[in-house]
Each structure stands twice: as C-alpha cells, then as structure tokens.
Length: 409
Image 1 (cartoon, rainbow, N blue to C red):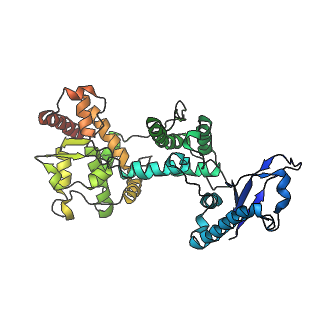
Image 2 (spheres, rainbow, N blue to C red; image 1 turned 30 degrees about the horizontal axis):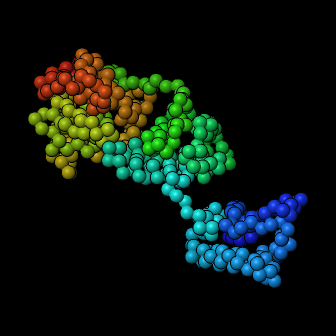
Image 3 (cartoon, rainbow, N blue to C red; image 1 turned 90 degrees about the horizontal axis):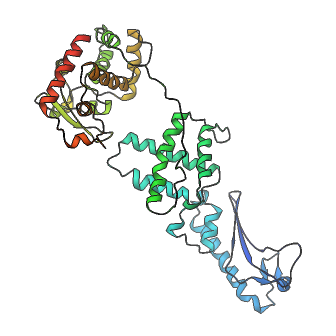
C-alpha cells in the first residue's frame, strides 16, 4: 500500500508575473488522490523561479522563504508521524482524511456529511428506540445500507446534508430499481423500493424539524408499486388442516397445532411463542404486541383451550405451546399445505389474516372490539376516548368466534 505526499504550486501555462499563486499539497493513498491548499501566503509570479520542483522547496539561498520551507518540513514530518501512528488502520483511511489532518482542518458538527448523518440517525435514533421491534430495526438497517451504498457508488458520500437535493432523491429511487454487475447489486421491485424509501424519509423529516435543512428532498416523490393479492385460507382449507391425520408424524403435528393456535387467536408468531400460563387469567390473556406495543386482550374460545390442554404441564418455562424457530415453522407449513392440497404457501401471517376474516364472519363489526382482538393501533381513533371495551363485550365476541369455529371445523 503506497502513500505519498507532494507539495506544488499550481500555475497556468502562461505565467502572470503580477499574480499570486498558492501552495498546495497532494496525497496519493490506495490509488486515490486528495488535494488541499495550504495557509501559506501565495507567491508572486515573478518569484516562482525560487521554487525548486525536485526538492519541493524554495531555494535555501533566499532567506525570505525560509519560514515557508520550515512550514513544509513540519507538514512532511507530521505526514510521516501520521503513517506511523495509524499503521494498522491505513487500509481504512482515505486521502481526504490525511489531508484534513495535515492541514488541521477541524470538521464542525454542522458540516457532517450525508453519509455520516444517516449512519448516526440509525445508531442514535433507531437502534436505541425501545418502541421499535427488532424486525423493524432490521428493516431500517437494510434501508440505511441501501442509501449508504448509493451515496458511495455515486460519489455523493461527502455531500453536506443541505446539499442533498430532490434530484439526488430521484436518482436514489432509480438506483434501487436498476441492477448493477459492477457492484453485485440486484434490482428491487416496486414494493421493496417503497419500503426502503419509507424508512429513509424519517431521517430527512428529522433534519427538517431540527432546521438543518429547509426542504425535505423526498417530499412529493412517490414510489408506485402494484399490490399483489395474497391467497387467503378458506374455511374449507382450515378444516382440511384440522382433519389431517398426523398420528404417525408427531413432529409435523406440533407445527400444525402452532398454526391452528394462530388461526384461533390472530397472534403474531413472536407474540404466541412467548405466551405463558402466567399471561392467562380467568380465561383470557392480555399482552402487548412486540411489534407495536399495542395491547391485545382476548377471552380464549373452547377450541383454543382444548388445544392448550394437549400440552399442559409438559413444557419448560411455563410455556403454553412448544417453541420452534420461525424458519422451521414456515418450512413445515409448506409440507402441511402440500399434504392438504392447498395450492399456495402457508405462513404464520396467513393465520393472522384468517383470524381477521373469522372475526368478520362471526358477525363482530365493532371497530374497537376488532382492534382489541387484533392488537391494531388506535391512533387517531376518536371513538376510543369515549367507548370502553369491557370484559362483557369481549366475552360476547368470544361466544361469536366460538360458534363460528365450531361451525367450520
């Protein structure tokens, strides 16, 4: 790895003896170049003959420029000190960093680059946020990685946050949609692009609210995509899963029970897998969703209780159901789908969608009751300030669901 330092005076082909010319330094490192202007007083064109190109210093005979030579010597000494002090980290250093160090350029906090700012946004705002689920944080991390790579590949990483404009935002969207063999990058579909941009917008909103920028560059820029209609589990599908004979396949029987429990309760897999007997009191459970911290409250139907009795007293940590990894869960659900003749892939989300459909088919129409059963966010729902969902209402909803599940199973 070669790192070199050079001092030079930038002059045009046609020299103007009455014009002054500054002294520059140039650093070559990792096959990249950076230049910077020194603080020395520029040299009059008529005196440039005193500059010796070979030594990159002024002639020692001219005492007038002794201080210039001492200044350049000090920079060169500091250059060698920097190489020695950062010997182990030089592979990660850039020539711009070396130039900034040699010229004592102190980067103020308000001069932070767009790349540094987006990374700090993830580390300081997203990562420590206790209200965000691990999956949400991972989604933000992927989006920030996409944005960081875009800045590096398009050489916009050194832009100040105020210099990132709408044209750059538009280029980012185009970058996400196009494949690149050079960077080993695949093209994202419209829905994935929308998800990435959705997670980058809050970063610029924060900058705008903090008055670091005067306009959000993503404001008004839309990412369109076609919503795909996902296949839904019908009542007949559900019945075929329940009636599937797995007496000789105890392993698959467990995954079937987990899936059916999700269908009966509408819980997400991460919420259901950590559910314990201590969470169930007087025939109902009340927990906070890990994804949104919204409260879910349900009275267990007879069908759900019957399923739980199968594992009562057999599991560690007071769990009500066996714990399995999500990857294995979805893999085994594909096997169950194949055995029952279901022509689309089952997933844990399929069960949650089935439960929401069951709520409707059971005749439960009250918005707040549905939200309580599903754990949906109640933000901006003015009715929640006036209407309280008590146990009697939820018990009535349980009876309706119980009757519906009995009818389809």
